[in-house]
Amino acid sequence: MESGKGKAWLYFIFGVCQWLPTNYRMNYFLDTPRKQCNLCLCNSLDTMDHLLQCPALAKEQILLKEEVNAKFKFWGIPYSSFPQKSREEELRNQWRFAARKHFPPATVSDFKLNLFSKGFYQVNRSKQFISTRQFLNSLSNLFTYRRSTPYYYLRQDLLSLLIQSFALQTQGFTDSWNYSPLFGEWTSIYSEDVPFGARLWSTTTMHEGCNAFFYQPPNTKVSIQGLLEILTESLETKTPTRFVLIVPKQEILPNSCLEIATLAPLCPLFSDPSWDAKVEATCPIHLTYCK
Image 1: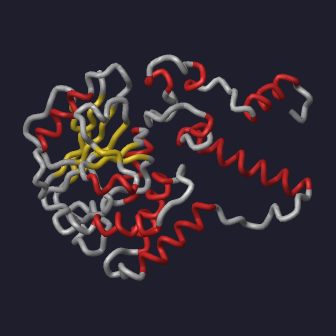
Image 2: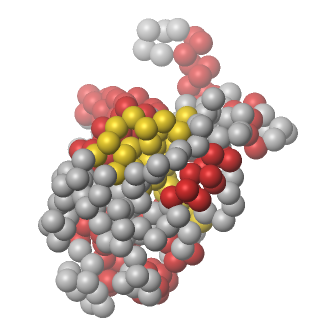
Image 3: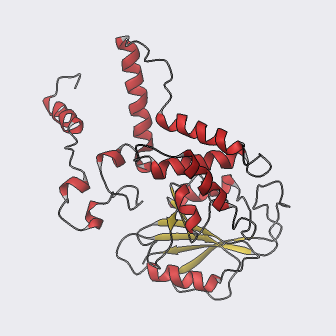
């Protein structure tokens, strides 16, 4: 626009009026898959709001923010350099302060409490009023099954490597206590996790069209063969689908599964200090891909 090119002004006007040719706008009267984003594979509708939040455009979003701040400083707009507290920040601070009156750090760490408040806001951000009591009640419900759920932390450097190598965006079959914030989305079989951002895994085809990561510890009670069968059914879709799994070693794998690496016994897989940072059994990493 600064160079005087008229077509750039057209895109600026379309952007202000939310008339950009997104999939949601161009395919408004077509089926839902035609309206979804083609860049991030999060199964999100390709709207103007998603354009500013799409994980595939993270670098461009950061650059846009830096350019806008630089222009504000150049134009000398008053108070542009002062940090402004957003509605999200104020509400999350309020929720964390209220939660600490009922849940001490020994019960839930500051790190986890911050993740809970972030997920709760993302779910309820479209509401005009978000109740603090609702947050506390939802947080209390998490403790009803925490004792029966394995509590673990996978090494973040390992997850970062897998996410970058395989473009993973969803952590599947996890819960509020074990999901990693490195993933944009996560699914759970517990309804108590839904208020904190989880997508409830209620159908076998839920992970179709996703690049998802699944993990089950060596002492899991989950049937790994059953999990592989369900995920294999999801690969029958025409949409791009890929799964990466860290699970106990299986003697027989479906035809669509490929064992790409094996973590030897005593491998430091966990980063939580309460664990011995050792794997009790051989845990191969399976890469399941869509043919």
